[in-house]
Amino acid sequence: MGKASSDEKKAVRPFSMRDKIGYTLGDLGNCCTEQFRGMFLAVFYTLILRVNPVHIGILMLVTKLWDAFNDPIIGAIIDLRIPSKNGKFVPWIRVFAFPMGVLCVLGFVNVSDLDYGFRIAYMFISYVLYEAMYTCVNVPFGSLSSVMTDDINQRTALSRYRALGGTIFMTVIVIVGPLVLYVNNQPVAGRFLMLASVCAMIGVLCLLLSSAWCKERVSLPQREEKIKLNYLHVLKEISRNRALLGMMFASLVVIIGASVTNGLNTYMFRDYFGNVKLMAVSGMLSTVFALIAFFGTQPVAKRLGKKEWSVYGCTFSALVFAALFLFPIKNPMLFIAVNGMCYLGASGLQILVWAMVNDAIDYHELRTGKRNEGIVYSTYTFFRKLAGAVSGSLSSFVLAMIGYNVAAKVQDVSVTQSLWKAYTGVYVLGYGLAVAILLLVYPLTKQKTQQMHDELAKKRAAKLESIA
Image (cartoon, rainbow, N blue to C red; front, side, top):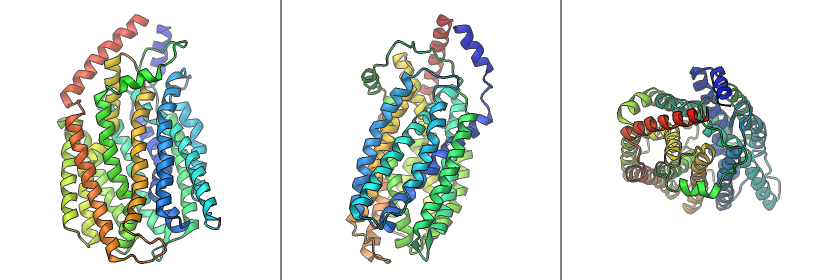
């Protein structure tokens, strides 16, 4: 059994640029549906379906909370299954990519002619079904990187390339979205459905390519088929994993901050600055900042450490947004430039987060002697989705609280001023709390991360020798 496993591993090609590009495409595929929905679904509900923002907020909160609880369940199911010849995670991506794409498109069908109650029901059903399919793709995709390589630098590279997938999509959609979806500063229903269809088709193609190019190659002792995973015991062990707890709570507050601002972004340009198509200019300039972050993050993280760079960058961004909160600006180009600088500051945590989650998975293995990538990763994504549920609904609640009028073409000055305060204030809280959590909870400094990987490599080698 040990010899067969060893021969099988030799047949797998070494880690290469193909894996990095494949992982980039996988994240791009996920973003083509999830980020498109995140940017435009609430806008579609508000401006096309004419649904009360409070009702949208409740819908997103309930469905996202339910979806978040599904993540650890799917992770446990994946960990219980015996890997196939194609691996442990890749088959899940291949099976569920297409239904996820279809349900993304269905979410943008214009049902505004239906009675209000039927509109809510359609929104709820399409939302829940999509999120279920997305979970079945995203949990195995996120866990995949932990078994593609165990090299620290290669994992950092994978985290960078994963972030590149999201950056590519956000750059394109922020430019294309406002130009395609709006005419004379007003949304056009059919164009939302058209762009959703294009994004879904590209997303499915990217995920299929990713599942073909990304290879699982880390040699780990196989779980005995008759032993069942004690899910509650694993969760108890996870609750003692400070590395995972630190990443979960830091991500929770950062995602809330970033997602609320993303949710308000359309309204900021449309109502505060008076021209929604300026979002396209923001998208073009963000490409420059994204490229700087992509090429600069790995050498900086290698020199300073992942935790250290994340703390420095988030501190800078929190201070800048605090200044913007106190001193509002009306020049959209100046705002775009300052916002881009803040992105550079926060990019350390945003790009390195997946490498830090892989470190948390290794930290769990070192402490417990067991490898449960699916549950550990899905527990992390549970908190990401919890953050998404809070932030997605929070942006709708913010609109309701500041008195946003869904039927008005021009908002009152008091509304736009409150919009600015909400936009900048939430960012300050998010980044500020993230810094505190990383300093007080997350234990893996540059030195401790290296010590952990050295010790873990010795333990894995000893286990594999005993099995052989």
